[in-house]
Image (cartoon, rainbow, N blue to C red; front, side, top):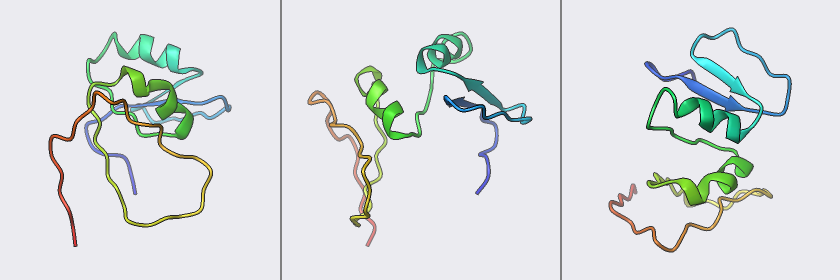
Amino acid sequence: MGALPNRKYAVVTRSSFTSDNENVVIFPSIKDALTNLKKITDHVIVSGGGEIYKSLIDQVDTLHISTIDIEPEGDVYFPEIPSNFRPVFTQDFP
């Protein structure tokens, strides 16, 4: 699995992760990422992890959620969806 075309990636990490990819920008905090991203775009897609989802759930205006009918073992879960959100579109795959 590789990067999607025509996209920039903002990585928020506490580690010393680096990238030579010109489409990857690394930030030490969510605050730094959002401050810088607001200067270049009005559309950000958050793709995890758990702490990032939890920190940003109250700031989003759209959720695209895929639900997979399995129950894997784990200790990180998506945060509770705010009560003001309503489904606009659903699709099931047999």
